[in-house]
Image 1 (cartoon, one colour):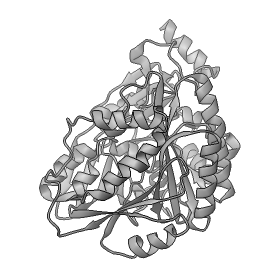
Image 2 (image 1 turned 45 degrees about the vertical axis):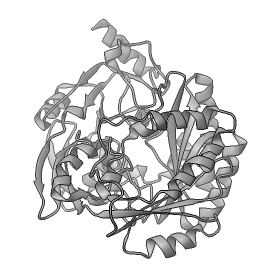
Image 3 (image 1 turned 180 degrees about the vertical axis):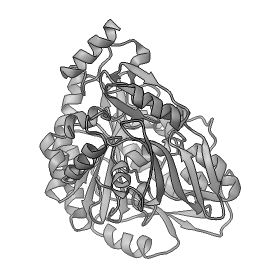
Length: 469
């Protein structure tokens, strides 16, 4: 009890916020994310299995509460110092599945891969999700994630209903028609207004798809995307990679419906796959002299030379372990992402490449995706049609490296803002408060909804303690 009071007092003084922490609690009371950075010391961890258990935990706890799923957010979004952490990973059951109507309802801790195991035998697929299947459904909704799906936008567009536990422990069903303001605030709200416990989703048909790879110039990319990707109804997924060291020659990768013979017989990526080759290649690209050239000289030629026809579910069930380093003890791999209106695409892309080179960022690649405007969520990252620039990079884990990354990340955020763009919130929280307010002026509406349902600010996390409170 004395140690818990000490932790809570330190949290109130700001001593546990937003810095890598390892010394204040026993290991089982530290909440870490995938990067190993920004661990948060909490007073208690609960692992509910039902909505009723979540409601009881929320009602019984008098302090602050944060919610976590698969823990892929990277900057304290899943915990609050000295508070209660709700670990949702045990809530992974299917509530119901209606194959005829292509709808399903799941508990929030279920991963996309858990759901795919149930859908694939029925020739169904997830309609919109991230590029990897390890993320929890509730977490994806909380950050309003997106993937490579053409024309779909964020995952919130496929959500039919959400079950929420509010700050007083009550359970509420929300949708576009029922408690709509709360529904909109929960999608992409990072746990600000309540705990998402169940999600009703739209589904899609599984289908056979073929990969088409093409090198295009930066100046021609928008025309290529409009003509060869967006205008074709058989295009299902797309991204383009900007490769180091110049980040100025997009490699376009599009998946289209196909009737060709399969080159990959497996319907889903095996769960127990070995990824030593990918891990060694990532290490070589980031540590060896001229390693940044390997992507262009080795990986890309292999991609172009091999035909690929597979099931949509196989491509959608990729395992994030293929990107996982052998160790994160010294270095870690992280993301930042920026959403840029179409009219500023080329100017931002050129500025991004220059900034990455100038700051000597160890970037593996920048992946480009497309999204229409988000007209649903309270805190949209796509206020209009945008292209997203997903920066995947390597950094050291020590404090000096954190400071250096913070410096050039704020530079990139300013670059995005100068081009009427926004940055994504599930990653390291390097933005200033002024940058956040400029990027997300809709935060005032989220604050308003939160005051109505959580007037005492029970739901919080290290992200919102910095930017929303």
